[in-house]
Every structure is written in C-alpha cells, then in structure tokens.
Length: 332
Image (cartoon, rainbow, N blue to C red; front, side, top):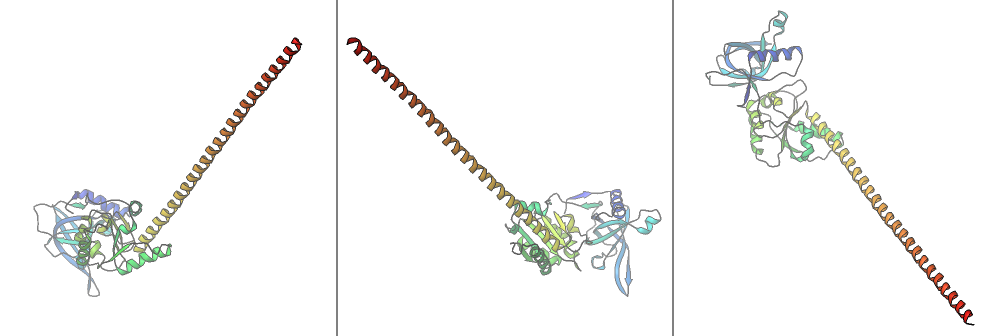
C-alpha cells in the first residue's frame, strides 16, 4: 500500500460533503498525524467511543473510533476511515470534519506526511460474473468461516445448484490467523481469484479494516471478491475488492445466477448448433436432389438424342429401300 493518491484538505472536505449530503458510500482515506486532546465517552461505566484530534501539516481534524483501535496520546499514527461533517457544525454553518476511524497504525514521525487516499495500481478489477465467464468456478478460493460457507451453500442449494466445486477454505478471522492462511495459499497455482466471506458481528475490522491483511490480499495480484458483514458495514477491504457483496448468501445467489445464465447460453448454443446442422443437412439434401434432377435431365437429353438418331437411321434406311425398289422396277 505504498502507492497512494495524494489528496488536499479541500478534496477531503468535498468527500465529507458528499458523504453527508448525498448519502454516498463513505470515501475511505488515510491521514497521518499526531494524536492530541484524547478523550473518552462512557455509558454505564463502560468506554464506548474514543475522541481526539489529529494534527497534520498545519491542519487539525477530529476523529472518533472504538476503544479497540484507539491510538495513544502523542502518538504519530496513520488513521484509516471515512470523513464526514459534524451535524452540529453544519447547523451552525460550519464545515467541521470528523474522521470515523476503523483502524490505526502507529508510525515513526517522518519529516512530512501528506493527507492521502488509499489506492493501488495492482488491484485487478472485474465482476464476479466476468471472472467466471473465463475461468472455472473451482478457480475461486473462498476464505471463509463455517457460517459463511453454510450461507453460500444454502443459496446455491435453493437456486438448484447444490454440487458446485467451490473451494472453501476455513479461516480464522483474526488479523494474524487470516494473514497466515493467505500466506499458506499464496503460491497455489489453482487460486485464480480470492473470495473473503464472513457474516456480520463483532470483529469484522480485524480483517476488513486491517491494512496488513488487505495489503496481503492486494499483493496476490488476483481479483478479490468480498462478502463480509451486512449492507451497513463499510470497510477498508471493500475499496480493493473487484466486487463486494453485502452477505455471503448474496454471493451464493450471484454465483447461481451466473450458472443459470451459463446454462441458458449453453442451451442456446446447442440449439444454434442443432439448427446449423439441420440447415447443413437440408443443404446436403438439396444438393443431392439437384444432382439427381440433373442426372435425370441428362438422361432425358441422351434418350432424346438416341431417339432422333434412330429415327434418322430408319428414315435413311427406308429411303434406301425405296430407292432400290424404284431402280429394280425401272430395269424390269
């Protein structure tokens, strides 16, 4: 993830306005800076949300995150998340930004770190159906939990395709367990694309929001298809996915839909082949009939020719006979 697109604070404000006003899928960005003014929000004596300020290049942005990914006061960090506008500030006519952080990396302070958006030129972009149109379904490696596998199989079974040769690879969805599993299959020649499937619940960001886990996937240089969480979960991994599905079940339905389309196309292709063969057979029959008709015409022409020759021979013979009889009478 060293390859990044540089963004200005103005770009960040535009992204936040888009998220807040137009209800777009939140733009994911990375911001490097120093953590200041760290504070907590508690409920029932339990810490629920961590707030703080991130200072960078002469700017300051407020952030919030869960206690699990919270940085420490004074740390130089890189926060990943989606920017939005403070509702209170919007009502007062101000554009105060808040970064909803999903993961944190503690860094050694460099001389200058610009505001950046995450991107990579190595991400392979194609839809799941486009991939399956040129590859076999067994070329998909599905890294999943037991529940996600069950959801995908259930969708396939309900759509009438219970025995597809998908490769399900049971995986622990902790950052360490997931990365170890990816490393295990990194050089598998049968793996032409990666599927990451897990239902909703706690701990999604351990993989979906992990920069290291996502980087491991991107470095595979293969299409990445994700089916993690629910429709309202937005994670870092989705930015690098060739196609994202809100649920493992939804991905199973999509695979079944591709197979239905393929079967229809195969049936159409077979019908075209049968019609083509039928047309060829009819063409061959036509050629055969034409040949027989031409033979009959040729035979009739030959018969007429022979008949004419025979008639001429008979006429000439008759004339010769008559001529001979006249000569005999004359002599008598």
